[in-house]
Image (tube, rainbow, N blue to C red):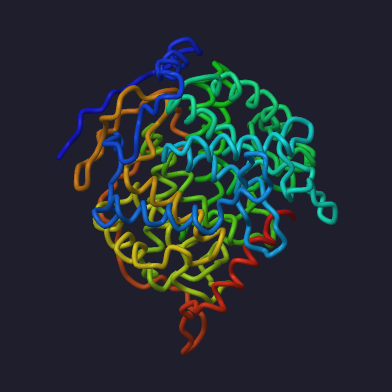
Amino acid sequence: MHFTSIKLTVVGTAFGTAILASAPAWAQSRPFPTSAHYAQGFLPSAVTTAVVQSSYANWKTNYLLTDCGGGNYRVDNATGDGSTFSEGQGYGMVLTAYFGDKTAFDGLWAFAQKNFHSGLMGWHVTCSGFTTSDGGSGSATDGDTDVAFGLIVAAAQWGGTYLDQAKAYLTTLKAGDFTTCSPSGRNLPTAGNWQAGSDACTNGSNTSYWMPGYYRVFQAVTGDPYWGKAADDVVALYNIGADPSTGIIVNDLDQNGTPIQGQTYDYNSCRIPWRAALDYVWFGTPGAKQAVAKITGWANTVGISKIVDGYDGNGTPTGQYTGLNAFVGGFTAGAMGNSQTVVDTFATYFVGIADNNGTYYGSSLRTLYLLELSGDQWNPMEEGSDGGAAPGDPDSGSPTSATPGDGGATPKDSSTSSSGGCGCRLGAGEEPLAAGAGAIALVGLLAARRRRR
């Protein structure tokens, strides 16, 4: 079945914000599930509404807390100290906006604002305020960017004042967390408002913080071309910095796309295929498609059930555990830009992983991955709820709002990836380990420690 998609090219802010403003104040305009789907890419049949709702319910039950009182909601990071990362708060704002949980969304936004420092949420906080042993008042750009996007989704979902708040927040986000590098001229995110822009340009910008699909929405909302250029710049760097054999993009690249020595594909960078795929399915960005097709093609040669929790750029394993939401789901989302066969194979395995695998981090990412894979992560700048490719449909190839450049990439065919040996092994006679309950708890703690360099 193929859906007729409504394509919008937004020039400036007037038309784009008119779409958001059309939502009547406080009335939910797009209840989950929608029939939104996408103009490009492949949707897996295994990701059903029931699968997505189960994951969301698990996430809410275990990690969405009201223990700070005063109507505040926070996303607990499961480290046992009653603390929250801004990353989790951003995840929560995106999820509750898409699932239509307005009370929870407003409580999450209130808690974020309660913990502002220089206009951005501190990266590590408790009910009492910023943590002090690890610089908790400094920002983390990934969380900040999700917070901004969550406000835009809320504006499309409920109307009201969310759009004005998003615009104000985006001004602060750009000033505090982004930089224009010299001499390349590329617009890149820093790790947060505590990192000098020159340091990010020279010593590495965190590739898992790159969200080109969001940046194009930000341009549509604000009319600021900085965001569209940032999207094109990071997509270009995906393909410059990717390993030529595996397509793996390690955790930090400099402004020229050179991988920073010692960086790997880890609990941060496992999110890259998911973020890049959204830019492709929403906007048809050729460079995003090229990046995800390459890396998921390599993952397919390994076998999705054998993917472990970490790799060097050349595909040599640095981890040992298989069957983790954070890694398997990231590759599955990326496979939306590969082929129907690959995304179905990956998704069939992914949906069989437990909802709470990986505790806070794995559960949060699982729910976000599934939202994207279901076709229900609609572009807030796209009018209506119909659109794009249903499972098995070919790509339409038509971009939507804030039309991207090609990111320096040549479009590649999305036919089925080749299969075979990957040439990367744990060692003679060794096999990856399926993660047991104890290992999964450890994985959750390791993921929590990855926040700052």
